[in-house]
Image (cartoon, rainbow, N blue to C red):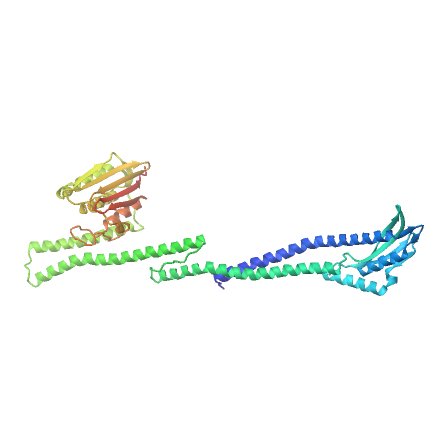
Length: 463
């Protein structure tokens, strides 16, 4: 059986409160009971000594007693629940409470027995008489026997005190239980509400609605982290969904243009409107090459992103590789009126040479496309400890700030006009990022509009 978090939290608060109250009552009763019994015995002994002292003062000497005062003391003690018997040194009874009022003595004994059995039902008490010596001038002149019901003498006030204390503890326990239920319910509501909101948002994400955001605040750090994570997840999925739709639209656009060109050319030649000559066939061939290149790039990206992608690593000089690639690009840069320069000495690295060639080629191709005539492209390769930093910097048109987070996404192009002169389907940078990350490196981009763009590759040298 499953229970909600709110019920579990409320029950846990209740259990903690009940357990705490029960333990407190048990420990308090154990502690107080020990001290209470000690107090009762000490109090009884004190009262007995006071009676004995009072009786001792009534001895007049030469075996004579102030019997009237002894009787008064005995009656007073009887009224206070003490049954006394006074004897002289010869054993002659001076005053006996049972002889004075036997019925009252029996009632007192029964009452004391009831009090003890109420508090200590297993005490096994009985009526006992304790003898106390009466002295005069440091000589024994008689005895005072004080009867009580043991092992503990509990007066009505003593019993009322302990009962009142237990009632207070019970009242505190009931209050604690009610308070824990109220507090537990409030706390459970505060904790469960944001979690329920997270569940609702997660369910919306599962149904494909990524725009929902959790705005409720919480003072619990873990819940704040949970809501922040869900919001970030929703934002990421929303961005990915937007990119997916954009990728589909871009792919359709990229394929539609050459296919439409091919269709119109072929229809014109089939209908006899155009003569089938070498120029028109060449135009169709160029569109086929364009489509084939796009498909090839997508296949290459799929291969690089697959789990079975394996790097063929060797030790080579990265600077020498970059210089060779620059030599291949020099004619194109020269024809476009763009200067290209390289800075760096020998930089050996353990990596896949062919794959890293692809990365450099893609970055140089990107710089060539987006740098105007008269511009400059700078490349550098320098070691920093155990890593190699490769920088490709141009002073071209730059990338808008809002596009920077997405430049490595598939088919994403900051060039919204999709001018075919710039070429490409937006896959080159994605391939470059995939290859760099396969080498346990990372690639970053920095750019400002009309100031240029810089790509920074950081690779572990691995030597």
